[in-house]
Length: 200
Image 1 (cartoon, rainbow, N blue to C red):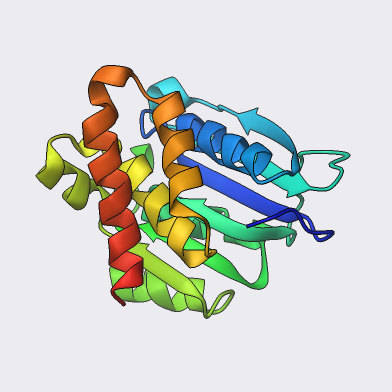
Image 2: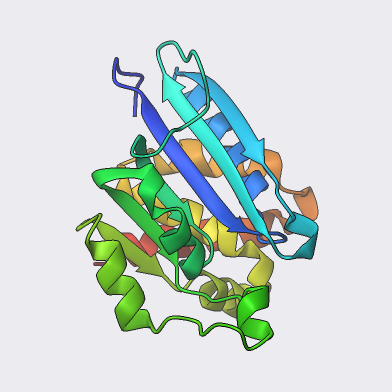
């Protein structure tokens, strides 16, 4: 995927501890390898307490700001499915939505104040914004390979297939960002995530 005039805006969101920032670092690296100017912005929130972690990554010939406003994201990557709904307004109508099919109960649900929405309701609400949505069982896949923590890399593999990225470039960026002792696990996680999309 070579640099084009049109910016590509990625909006990543997850819950603290899911590797959202690592994923955005990899995305930034991929953009640079593809010849783009790249800028990144992060909002950690109350990540240490299970709060939202948001990262914006923008690829373009020239990026003036990494901040993605409501309705501007070309791609929304959610590492937790309720976070996909919470930040859905940032995705442009018809944009690409990639969701990790995994739930982490927010404080309101844990305290019994609210109910976690059922998948059917979530899917229906997400579909109002994007017909192009892909759900991946990232945690389940990563866990089967040895560690659920590699779920973020599973989703990166899926994303690389969804936007027709060069697998070798993406994998190289992943391996540059993860500890060497986990290289094999992350390689398998990336390939598994890519295969899920390619086989559909």
